[in-house]
Amino acid sequence: MTWRRFMPASALVLAIRLGGAGGGFLIQLILARLLAPEALGTFFSATSLAAVLALLAAWGYPNLAPRFISRYRERNYPWLVSGFLRHAARDTAITSLFAGLAVIAIACFWPDATADNRIAFMMAGLAVPMLALLTLNAATAGAVRAFALSYVPESLARPLLFLGALGLLIVLKEPLTVEFALAVFFGVTAVIALGQFLILRQILDLGPGRRPPRLARVWRAEALPLVIVALFTALFADLDILMVTPFLHGADVAAFGIALKLALLVGFGVQVAHMIAAPDLADAHARRALDAAGTALRRATIFPVLLTGAATLACLAGGQYALALFHPDFVSAKWALTILVFCQFLRALAGPSVQLLTIIGAQRLNALLCCVALAMLAAGNTLLTPAYGVTGAAIAVALSWSVWLVLTGIMLHHRARLRSDLAFVGFRSRPAALAPAE
Image (cartoon, rainbow, N blue to C red; front, top):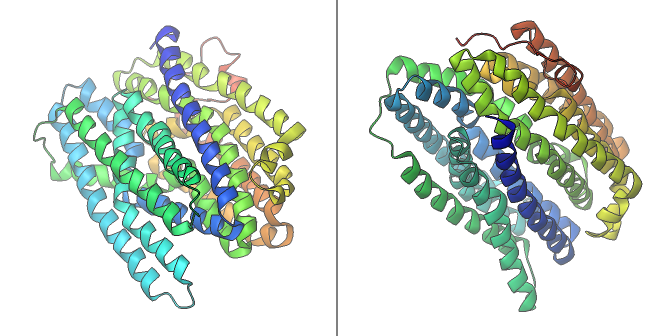
């Protein structure tokens, strides 16, 4: 893909995300204004639980899709593309149904739970299968370069529809409860997931496909380690909110959730650049046309560094004003917001090292590194959050991400003699090639 083709794709996805970010910003603002801080904390906890379980139920297949779809399309094996996707959908459907039912059962019988919390988490259980479907289909659409279908439903349509429902509630001057907010949010998600599924089925026009037992074992074995990778990269906010919930009051959970979600909106610019480059890197690896990887790496590194660097300076200068829009009590989270946005800058400096480890087949190594980072995050939250509140939680994130990014860069160089950090790809005329396709 040339710069000329890459930039329209990047611009399209970035425009979609900016529209969705604008809608998401207004949603967080309206929820913070209409819900008490404790109720907002419950909303964040329930939606985070549903998202985390949905990603677990997807087995890591969304992260694996670019690798195998590129390989089978390059070798002209459409029956294996179909087989892989049907296998992934079947595993995801079964696991997500069991996970959702487990959450509902626990919510029903959990002692000391309030009625509001019980209902909220039962709704979260019902939402797990449709969120898992949305996750898998978005990744599949991205792997075949249907970027609009990958990003529009979840990143733009869902926040705008939810925003419209909240706006109607304001016009009608009806009070907002956490149960109603969750019902609308998950209802919109169900409609979006179904629509995306139907459109994607038309685009792919899959035949019956084949699912040889040997390949099915390979797919499952390679997908499982990527669950940890996906949790740490795609759903970091939801996972961390669940981690800090035992150590913070409901209002502090809401303040930290707002700061983390704002930081990850900035970080989405990094994610977009990495995800758009992933199919090109996977194709280069499959074709053994490895000299093209250097240009793709530069595209995926330089722009995110500029974006996140500017955002870090903006938060340092005026982050308290952005937080005050949500609630006056959230101003105290300014330093947490600045630290969390700086973490996105570190991620941009490191380049798409996580995606490259997946592409070269180092799934287990990738998962091990994420496990180390998650252990650091859990330890940091346990030690720092009770003592320093939301700032301590942000410091725990910074420590975890620093260890993760450094170790990932070291392992990428060790396995493939490749670096993806800015210092290398930005100033070297001919970056090293990827390892040959396995």
